[in-house]
Length: 147
Length: 419
Image (tube, rainbow over all chains, first blue to last red; front, side, top):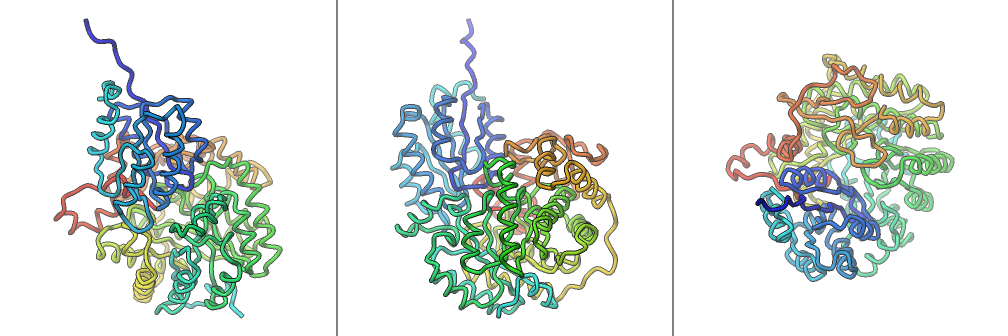
């Protein structure tokens, strides 16, 4: 008997409220789909309320927040804390990455995001392979459907 | 009396160079403007507005100022107007406000209070790539702001951002068409002094052809309007090495002069890493000015590969949709007559695709429903994440060649921005 087929894990991919950049999101969608994830891509300038509503609506296995405009440490910490405060994302893996501040990589910004509830935080030093590995580890059993 | 923005560019007699500069603190912003004016180059100043103000979140902009949180630009709508006025009086040279707002009323209101009459953007170029605002709201929002600006200042100047959609990987025929259409939109709402933007992309010959096409269409469609062309130094993933960044900027300055642009928006050595300092901006302005002075305009247009015909077909197809250009633009995107590749906005059809070919020319892989000859589309392999990254970082790789051979690493996804 073979194990029942598992559905590919669903990743909700988003920017933060003030960040208009999208190439990072286009790239990550392709990368996540190639590595066996389903992706809902919310695009640029996602208000906190919309991100919370989309998490509740899609019930994803993980949230990936990518941001490059330098406001990510502030917007990211705010929305991650809001996600953690609600029932839909209290236990979800939430990965945040990108250019988080206006002055280059800074460990303090990553620590603040972890304190706000992020499961993992990346700055400019991440490779695609490491991102996928980290996401799979964070997904745990839910990653089994991913290639 | 400070001359108007467009008049200053026309009177310059050489390529005008301009930074992308915005600091939250009025003292830093003032120092930046003074340093721009003092650079060994013909310059105009820039106040780039922070992202909270751009999206209309003025409460967040105020809160950041109260808490001392660093912002990525000047919060023009919420900053102390006295400090801003003093800053502008000290600068005393033409200044353009750069923002990125799909619904720009707060920025235009602040400009009116401060007596600033030069800005940029457009109903398409600041909506589709940078916001979730429906195009059908951005168009009337922009129309109202443009009308008010035209009515309040004789020297009102508006620059289209349509020649820079998404910063990279948009075939230039579409960029030229969008830049012309936004200039016509500004003109239709009363602004008589405009600039048309275009971004440097992946191939110098194609960029030259695009600049010539843009000038040809501006001459044809804007007969009773003062206009000039502004080139943006490469907007995509920027070289990480100082030498690579400098070489790319020098090439942009040469391209601007050869192709007949009157103004250049520079990028700095810090671009790949963080928001540049004032000193890095001044170094970039001076390097670009020196490179421009060593270049001469091309005596003849470049070989015609059909770019002008493509841009003309797109402009004419949109103008045919509705006598009101704003409505025509909304209908054009709804029908896919205009379709920006890789644009995630809900109002973009998303059927067109592009790629960079082996010679570095940007090509259509699919023209979607745009009224273009399907022969304009060239076969390309299905796009993968690594293929996208390779296309996005092609220019960076070329200019960083020496250093990346030593490091042997790949660009990180976090490097995909700011455009």
